[in-house]
Structures are given as structure tokens and as C-alpha cells.
Length: 415
Image 1 (tube, rainbow, N blue to C red):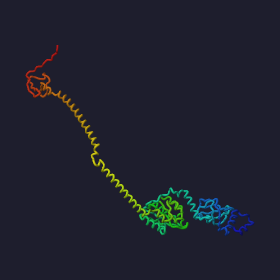
Image 2: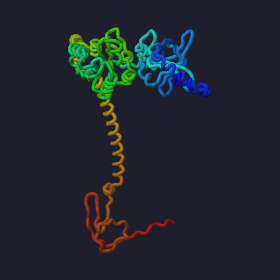
Image 3: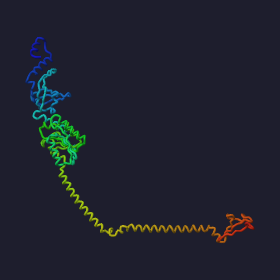
Image 4: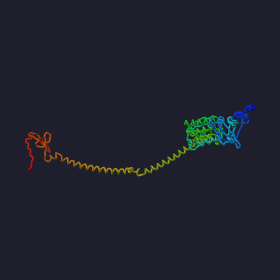
């Protein structure tokens, strides 16, 4: 609603609140001074809405104004606004019709007195440090003698040439694998992260060098990304950061396992010097030779001393203790054997006496004889009949006879 329209309404009743607010909004929007205004002040009452819009106030010692920065503009910020921060805002002043309040609609914001990139760098550095990503205790050791070294950098920059030259001179035994990546500009951080993930998941290398040559903070900004920092922290492979010159520090330097001031220095830190290794091997060989000579001489002396001992001159001495023991054992065995034989002889003699007493031939030798019939021994005369043929055994032979008479004696009964 413009002024002419407002005048036409005179005499036709009052305006509505929204009509009045709309009129005032049109006045603000039509003022060239308010459509491209720059304001400096301190942020207060800062709120980041879930929609991505930023709501806050900007104040100085004498006043304040409400401000809003919509998500489309806030997405381009390189730092995180916070209460108490002094900023320079650019935007337009307009009226919010529903509330009838005017506010500053911010299209761009930068820190007052410090660069936006530097502020973003400090904020991220502080946050990651509090999370423990820079802890020295969590850093992995760099292999002393790597077999394969991965390099993440631009394939056309001076950094890769410096690294390859240093490694070729110092430690040509190691193979070098290059992951070509963007090192500045749009998409650079994403390619650097992919390079870290490739070497970490493939287990292709023992050590990774990531870096580039020097430049401005804008040129090095890809190495200050939070995504790259977390990829380095998650990786199991040891990582050396070599970004910029000696005075340049990036987030990548703080989170890496080792920071090198330059790409050339990173190559030196990642590899031993083959000339020093050759000297070390030569010195070690000399020390081993001398130690072997000393040991050989010592063993010779011990052998010569042993050759002069009684054992070597009279080997029989070795067996003396054993011979004495054997003699004692022999004597004990011989005594035991003799005792056993004597006891056996006595026992046998007793058995022979008993057998001799029971031997029928011994009875016959005393004048007795044995009568037999048909191979059986006759015990009594009643067993015979007249005419029986019998044999009579004597001590020195036998006689054969025919029974002609049998006399049976009656036993005495006694009176």
C-alpha cells in the first residue's frame, strides 16, 4: 500500500494492523539506504534453528537490532557465530508484517578484526582438541624400515617430485605409491579423504604422506577440513602430514601421527638413509668379527687347559670310581651266590637221605627180598596157592620158583 492508496482510504474507516505493517514494510524496502546496509556489533541471543536459519541480535553500547540469517546464506559461512563475537553484517532492514517489528536480514557475515577462515580454523582446532583427536598418546609410530610408502598429493605439483627425489636418494628399497588428489579448491577435501581411506582399507602401504607445497590460508584450506581430520584419526596406517612451508600449520598437521615442516622433510622422516644403514651394517660386521675372534681365542685357551688335565693324560681315571663300584658289586654277588649254593647243597643232602631211606633197594641190601607174581608184589603168604610161579627179587638179581608148599603162621595171642 503506497501513500496515494493510504490517502484514498481517508474518510473510509481505519486500516487493519497488517495493512499498516505492510505499508511500513514497503517504506523500508523502498529506502536504498536500508537495502544494502553494513552493520558492526556484538552477537547476543544467538540461536541456530533446526531449519538451519540463524536468529540473533546485534548490539553495541547504545542499542541493538534483531537479525535473521536464512539457511541459504548461513550455509556459506566459514565459521560458527556465537554470543559475544564481534561481526560485520551486510544485508537489508525490513519489517516482519506479522509482528510489526523491523529486523536486519543478513546476507553475509564476517568476523570483525579477524578473518573468517582463521576464526573457523581456530574454532575447529579447539573443538577437535577437546575431543582428543590431537592426543599424543593416540598417535601411531612411524615404521623405521618401510617397504611401501603411499603419497597423497597433486600428481603435477612440486611436492610429489620432492618426495620421490628424497626417497630415491635416501631409501630406494621402498616402493612409492601415488594417490593423485586435488590439494586446493572445490572438491579437494573429498579427494584427500578418499586417498586416506584407500590406503587404509587396502593395506597396500606401511606409511602415508599427505601434503602439498606452501600457499595462503585459502590455498591450504582443504587440509583444515573436519572430514579429513576425522579420516586421519580413524585410519590404522601411520600418516605423516606435510602441508605448506615450515611456518604453515593446518588441522591435518595436528591430527596426523607426525608433522613434517615440508614434503621433503616428510620423505626424510618416513625413511632411513641407506648410506647410514650401510655404515651401520659394516660397523656391526666388524664388531661381530672381533667378538667371534675373541670367543675363538677364549675357547682355544680352554681347550689347551683341558688337554693338560689328568683326565686327558690318563683317561682311565674317568672309570676309577665306576670300577671300584663294580668290584664291590661283584664281591657282593659272589658271596650271595656262594651262600645260595651252600644252602642248596645242604637241602639236597637232606632230601637224598630221606630218599635213600625210602629206597626199596636199600632194604634188599640188608638181606631182605621181595616176592612178586605177575608183576605184582606179594604181601602175605595167603595170597599164594600151591603151584603158583613167583619171582623173588634180591639186591643183586632175581630168582624164579614154583610154590610147592604154603605155611601160614598163626599170630601169637599171648597168655
